[in-house]
Every structure is written in structure tokens, then in C-alpha cells.
Length: 330
Image 1 (cartoon, rainbow, N blue to C red):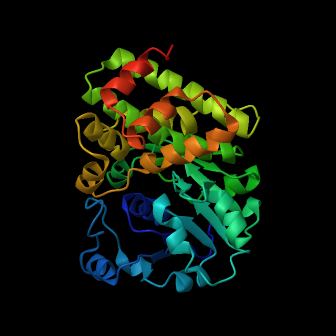
Image 2 (cartoon, rainbow, N blue to C red):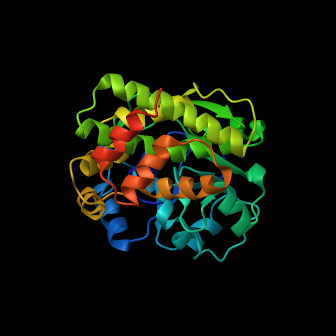
């Protein structure tokens, strides 16, 4: 498939990995990067100066810009890969009509304060029809994409025909794609898996072993299913890679920033100190609060989410809270 003009919005590791994937299928792309000095260094070296140094680019095929309105105007498909805490701040600068754009969100978080899924925010704020909104889910660490290690993506849209059409953008020799129309389920799973990765990291630092980690993640999948069913009753196979696969890789991988964040908190770092040392956004920190607030209305049993909220926001002792959690899991 040759969609005329594709844009990447964002400059982090995930945005960089997605650009590498899309350039396998497109002759050129537009790319919004906020800082001009980052663009200048990218053009000079052929690499993102801050992320995924192993990924090399032919910059003659990339039209960089710090002007998000210019990029939006010149693109048909927008691939959104900005960390959730900064999505609203970045997109609020858009002054162009977005109603005919296709927007595919690769954001694995919710909009803070508004407490909205990204697709809900895009639909509400920009009046983009839901059938023009897609998501990217699945186990796919950016670092492995840079190394061209085999990875799997799930492309979600309420219209499966469109999901199949868009999936061709991301199909490469090193990326396989599947499709789904369970947009809400996949989005919530993508948010919640980061919370469980933080929990897994904490438990490792607190010297819980593999046996407990297996039980933790088994219960995590049950929580995702309960919550997704309460929000959007539907038949969904949460053993699929877009759900279970994403949870496993985020909870276990050395590349997982959420796992790393949890490890640091488990070792005694303050929240602020862990965030500053990582220099990257741990989406699960914000996702914990978002799911907690959403669940105040839903009242679904989410003991792991509740435990993480107590530790991250009520500043309770990880040792004490995790010990209490062990009595609630099965």
C-alpha cells in the first residue's frame, strides 16, 4: 500500500523505531520533532541524537520540521508517538482541520487530568471520526526494532478493513502485523501493562522470585480482562500477543523503562529521584493514577493497581504493600 503522505509525531525511541519501520514501505515521511537542534544533529549524523543510536536513516527521505501545523497540513496519516503526559501540550498547538486525517496512536498511556484514552481525546478534541482512528499495540520494544529483531504489532481500528489497510504500513521483514477491532480493550491493556511492569520491577528489587512473578502476571491478566469487560463488554482473547505478549515483554525485558522504574522504587529511590535518573517517561506512573480514577466509578477488583497507587501516590512502603498484596493473589 502507498499512502501518499505519512508523518511521525514525536522524537523518542518509539517514534524513531516507528519511523524506521514506515520508511521500509514509504519512499519518504514527514517528521515533527520539537527541537531544531535535535533536527540539525539528526541531519548531520543520520541518527537520532538522543535515542536508538543503532538505527541509521537516509535523511534525504525525511522532511523534518519543528512546526506541527506544517507537518499536519502536509500529511494524510499521522502516527502519534509522543509520551502521554505531553500529548495534549503538543497537539493543542494544532490549528488545522483534522477531521479528514487518519491518526494512528502508538501512545501507551492516557491523557493526564482529562483521564481519557488517546483515541477518545482525539475524537473529542479534533472531531476525528472513530473509523479514522487507529492504535498500535503488541510486544515491540523500540530497541529491538533498531536491531531489526523479529517483532509483532497489532493494529487496531473499529473498522477491520481499515486496520488491515493500515497494517501494510508496518509490515516488514522484521515486523509481522495482526489486526483487531477491540480498540478500547487494546488501549486499556496498553495502559495497564505498564503498571504491572512497575510492579514486576519492584518485586524483583524486593527479592521475590520467578514463581511469584508468574503469579503476579497471571493475576495482572485477570485484572485487565475484568476491567476491559466492565468498560466495554465484548469477547476478547487476552492471550493474544496484543494483550498478553505486550504485558510479558514489558514486565520481563531489560529494555522496559517501566520495569526499571519499579526496580528503582523498590530499591528505595523516591519517585522524583527515579524519574530524574531515568531521563525517560515511565508511562505506568501516570497510568496508575488514570486507571485508579477511572475505577473509582467502575469498582472493579484491581488489587495490583491499587497496590501500585498506594506506593506511587500515597507514598506507602513498597515492602509492606507488596507483602499485603501477596495475600490477595491466587
